[in-house]
Image 1 (cartoon, one colour):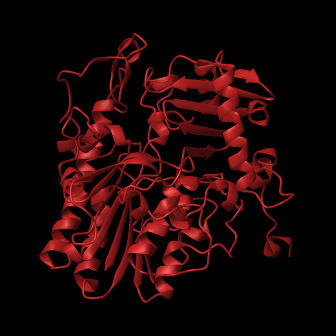
Image 2 (cartoon, rainbow, N blue to C red):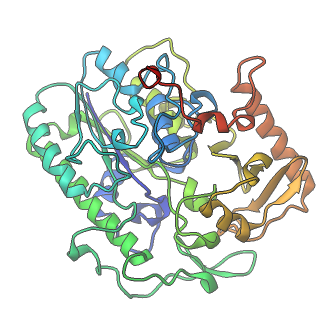
Length: 444
């Protein structure tokens, strides 16, 4: 069994046709979903890029990896503990040829855990200089497709990171106006307002411009879908498609104008609900849509389960084969980011803002806080939503103290369960992870 893990940056689940979106943005991904398994309630474990990717490749929540940062412009910041194995290291030690097509190493801090374990780390950025991004999918495929053709006869683990549809929107011109105009699908929330799924409340739709709009975002998704199609066609051409486990997921979503923000700050559904799709004929069901909470931390144990690889390391996630068999693997989902946690439990969602974060909020966070206005409660600030009645998360139900207390208790128990005895909650010492780390050669 080969393994191909696609992580498509900034991809919201609710902007894929297979997740019910009203536009045909994802024909190839839809086909993979029809031929495999789609997880309807898939959530990130860490937000944003740094924590999300780290959770995907380590099987750990940020509370255990301590990686709450995305240090794209800050040198010498916190590095993941070398004793925490990465998925690539485990696969390499078990006989797989490992390759990554990715450029996260170009972050200013050069996070080494994104490189560990790869026999081939192919960075198509064409520079050693630090950059935030943005590598267009077609440029990555020009390196990726020849590699597949040359190595398809080996047992491989292949990690592919597409930046599309992350901003800036620089897809080929043919994908820039494909979704311009057209009717929007308007629904009425049980709580009373009208909204467009994936867009927001009807009276708060982001208008956009030539550089930033939901139309452009959807065009980027269609473009990256075509890049996935090229890879799938190559696997099929070489006769290894059905012997390859294909996983498609994302690190986080995008606000797209909701909650007063276009980027991916905050822990609302638009940011934390991500796609998770798997295809492997004869080993996985076809056309199955799975309910129950899946999270990024489940990717590693699922791959190891399917590959029949045993390890003594303790992951936070669980093999999703259990969920596929109809067994519940968790009662609720928890998502973390810098200074915030969210717990999603049935119809209810609690977002906790830890007080420390409010002292000097960054620009994005300040914009978000000005819009959502979290309410002080028991030393933190909170947002409480009924995401069934209020799918756009605009009515903060903080007066439901019974529900707030219930979810806070569950979240506090979750925190205790993920810390060693006597260990401090990382939310209390976040500044430590952004402080420059001592570098011996600099001292000399």
